[in-house]
Image (cartoon, rainbow, N blue to C red; front, side):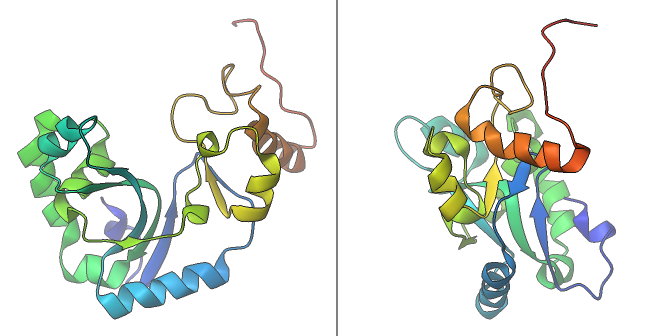
Length: 188
């Protein structure tokens, strides 16, 4: 919500990535095309839809006053010029006060409630979740730009560590620190 407070005015667009997202393949060309589309369509953000309204999730849509689709905020392409020009931070702060007793996923719920489906849909490869194609490491290597370890079973936890798609996290860890990532069974 406060991104406009920290990014200088000369930046017109930014790519926001959650800390539980890793980059598997190059992204520059794809991101450039999406940023052009955001400007052309005068849209605030490019994100991936996580839920379409149905009988199972209707409560969430009602609670947040969202019409038909709800996005995941783990990877966002932001038209920062429009964000700042429309005082979007102020709008989000007002919305958060209005729905504060209904919020479960803070920034994500508030943004969904405020934007209400008026966003550019980004390709799945830019915000791919490991549970969508479980066990398919080859699929992710070929078809994923950003792998988003959303949910509870992160690859650095006991439950997420044995998952086949945790291999990407383990490989990045080894590249960065020069050793294998291990989870201790003992509490300190």
